[in-house]
Amino acid sequence: MAPSRPRVVRAVPGALSRGRERVTGVWSHRFPTVAVTGMTGVGKSELVDHLVGRPQPGGTPEAGSAVLERRVRRGGRLKGFRFRVVPGENAATRLGALDEVFHDDPVDGVLHLVAHGHATGRRPAGTTGPAPVTREQQLAAELEDWTVTAHRIAAMAVRRERPTWLVVVVTKADLFAEDLDDVVRSYSPGSGTPFGDRLDELRALAGAAKLSIDVLPACSHLEEHAKGVDPAVTPKQRDAYLEALRARMAQLAGHV
Image 1 (cartoon, rainbow, N blue to C red):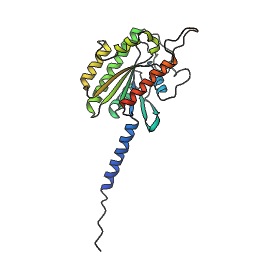
Image 2 (cartoon, rainbow, N blue to C red):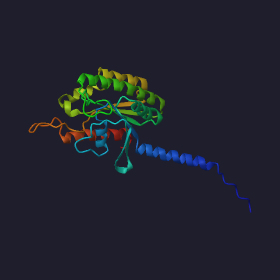
Image 3 (cartoon, rainbow, N blue to C red):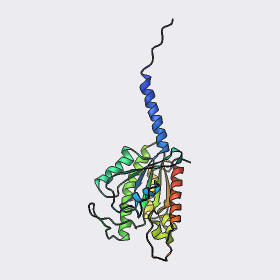
Image 4 (tube, rainbow, N blue to C red):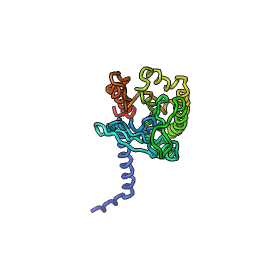
């Protein structure tokens, strides 16, 4: 009888490693990670509550998170998204969260929220209640916040092999419904606005092949209106905005 051939034990760790990589790849495709960024008071947590199908009655409390929030949306056919909500507070926790989602554990896509100067004014950490701010102050803060985030996105995009997608979400759309088309256009590449110019710079830094950019309107919590007065955005319209955002995210993630 011929001697049996020795088993190749050294191949097992390599096979296990390849198996883990395949499982990780499948998981990442089915549940890509999405960073949700934007200045404090813009409505990041509330929008994600709606996207994952768990809106809170009366809206999300206006507390502001100081830590990175993690949420998961599970859709049909075992697909969904893993959201990473970056705190808007200008603190060390925010910078650490930005490092995590754009460098340490890079995300697959980004939802960056803007509100046309209508972000809720927030008091310093540890105090409650809205702070009195002007719309001009909020627009300036919004642009400053975006400048910091855009640099992180550009650095991530040039490092990775596969493309990154960005959706600029113009939220609180019910507060400027009559001018919505013009407002969305002002947040778009090539618009000639300060925000649009920053988008053009980002695309030039990252490369058009490395970064896709969409701009979509949205709103989650609808502001109360006087009795007998028609709302600027109805719940049905609000749901249509959210569904359009979900559909575009599914396309960008390769789920459809």
